[in-house]
Figure: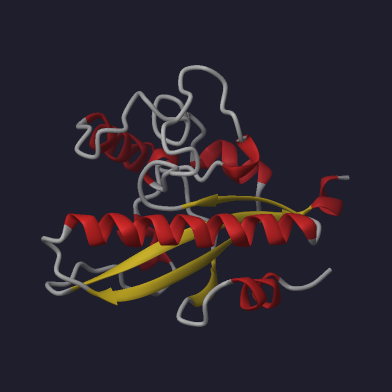
Length: 182
């Protein structure tokens, strides 16, 4: 089985940075904070997507029982932060890249689930609350799982920051080898 970084290098644009971080620790405080931010519904997807609460209800405690590693992919873009259309496009590009990597890793024998910012965009309009039409393509929101990116980065010796004229988009791939399920 190929290493995930080798798979990523064959799938992702070269501008993405790749790293393996320690699995995010479950924090009830972080979960509540993230889910409350979701409930504010600034993005308009709360309660209408399988990738956002309450449709996506798994948390880090559950996910850590299934997956043991997390791959981080990120890419920095210089962009006018008031250009919501461009920011939305960047989030869509990230989700597509996360999805492509997850699918490639699954073909290589990994059990994995990818996360990115915001609601899954695969279908355009989610079927929620009807069953997800393409569950293998689902890319849940990082916040929906209760990942506080600032604390997660800090725990891995990294810095998560907001910039005036740039944005860094992050994707997480939670994974383990299928054979480790035995």
